[in-house]
Length: 434
Ligand code: SF4
Ligand code: SF4
Image 1 (tube, helix red, strand yellow):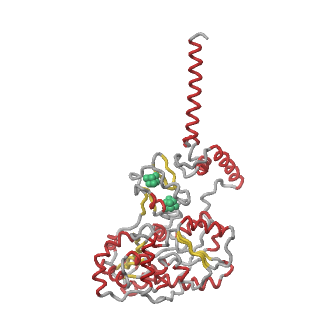
Image 2: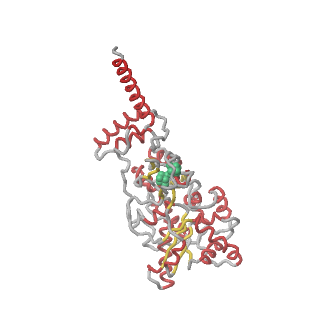
Image 3: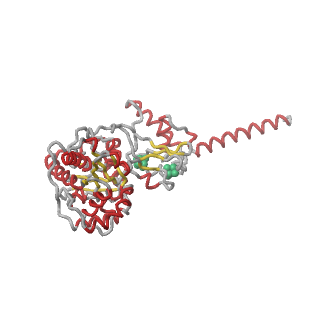
């Protein structure tokens, strides 16, 4: 896997796009424009939140991920189910049933992301207690939130909790366990993450805060779910004893679950990208006091709301809560000493900056203000930009023109038509010898 600075899972299917502009206003970072009748994503702005996938009526926004058939490319395979996977099934009272079904479906072994989440919970408790100067620490498990802070809220970067996401830790631990159990070299072992969202696809393929992620292939939960169903009944009759995650680990699938594992009340948990942005804005304005931790999830309801899941997030949330009644509080607590922490810092990426110097930015901002004042302020989206101000910024950046605004175009056409009428009258008068 190569490491790219701005690599995304969310892409456009050009053939399916009708240029309807539904998506442009729902993108939280203004990453989408419609140009020449098709949507275009600026990858530097995209945080892989999946909002555009949810709102596109023509299914033209798609997430890219790997195929289940890739199992055949390895001698030994390990499935890493995200905790939200359990929320997809009805009346599930034992996680072993899903884990057994994963093995029957074709994986050699399983390693629960929830087990690693319990380790991250314990590391988080220790880190938060030891670093009051960074309070409130912001959860870094949702890659969209980390990407958003990196491009839009640089002042909050020092508040990021510098711990590996559970899937990253789970992948390394699963690989080590598999190599020890089989004696196989690393390249013959395939670590497959079953992901609820595109953000985790890109964060595994192109990690920001660790040198290398041990996940080899990322599968969409919605692809794996139907393949598991035929094995669920049989697995329920005599499930293998595979579960390593308790209530704390499985709780990470719901918004508030990660914070719940910290065993403190001094936290805030917000979900849904618009709410996340409001919380980050308030945090920048120092509106929160006495908080130790802030959990933020870009998807409504937390990971159960990811666009690669199948169940309604509110239903999945209830299912996870019910399942938790049958689980012990926690099962896994120890991390190898060399794992768990970032080995790279998150750096501010000033992708929204207008100019390359402060002076240039101020001048460009003045032009943006001037242009915005000339536009009708209706934010109609007909120009292909999400707002009049966004069009003004595009013009100042040199990637759009004033006549992209249909109101300005109308004025221009009216002006030409008036001039032509005037010339026509003059010509007629001249012809009539007036
Ligand atoms: S919502 Fe966006 S991606 Fe979907 S058809 Fe309309 S313009 Fe294209
Ligand atoms: S995935 Fe999110 S950030 Fe990226 S283009 Fe779609 S709505 Fe915008």
